[in-house]
Amino acid sequence: MDRFPIEAGHVLMFARAIGDPNPVYEDADVAAASEVGAIPAPPTFVQASAQFDPDYPLRPRIGRPWFGSGRTPSGVRGRAPSSTGKGTDAGSGGRGGGGTGLHAEQHYEYHRTPQVGDVLTATTTPGKRWKKQGRRAGNLVFAESITEYRDQHGELVVTARSVGVRTERPAGS
Amino acid sequence: MPLSARDLAPDATFSAVVVEDLTRTQIVQYAGASGDYNPLHTDEVFATQVAGYPSVFAHGMLTMGMTGRMLTDLVGDGRLLAFGGRFTAQVWPGDDLTVIATVRAVGDRAGTPVVELALRTTNQDGVDVFAGEATARVDP
Image (cartoon, rainbow over all chains, first blue to last red; front, side, top):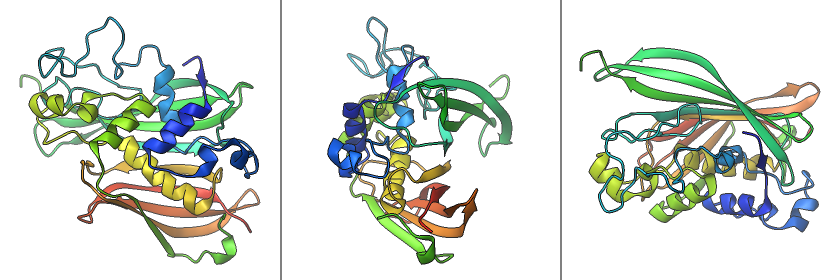
């Protein structure tokens, strides 16, 4: 992703969504007097970089069909978009929607605390892949993706490691 | 107030309730903030009639976000060095979630005192929905 600006209004909305009333997220004066010295991003905030991904498949996009309900329960029969590599859970359309992708793990390493005013870029590369025998039909396929978030100076801010899991159906079923 | 290494004993436990009676609206609020509008989280008709779930369910990242809130309350803002874990069960509307952080070690990383914490986020039935770990800077 080319440009992920960390903005005060976005941080406030995110803090509200996770139920965090910490004044450091809504009062710039409190934040300026804090150890960070600015409004910090909450620990999982980089996940909201999806907002700045022009092709993010789990957001309705103008002029494109959406797989959620409208006149019928599903807007797009059959295939739902996959979020593979985007680090977001339940990316495919669930059991009936043509996929079974789920978010299995998420890990962050903070090289410093991202804060309002930072403009990050994100680069995602695939990591390890492994298989496990599922309890029901098919193998569970785990796939890792590593995203590096760098700031406006090119310095590494956060390294995110996401693991997605999906069911691989046996051939012929 | 940030934690001090002096006050941290191995196996000391901290806990906090991070949500009671999780609402569908909060899940939608998280969809709006995070940008992940997957209808499995935001659209009861799709989640039940197309995907076959009993209702919409929370984003794993909402659970992790609420877990992170407990952590920043505990260790202070801007103090986390690492935070991660596994999503071990789904979180449904109506759930109550509690985060339990247990001190695994108090140590030193390149001259900076740090605490290593084991994390569990559990629902009202005592089932773990998130299990992980965190490392944070602490005061000497």
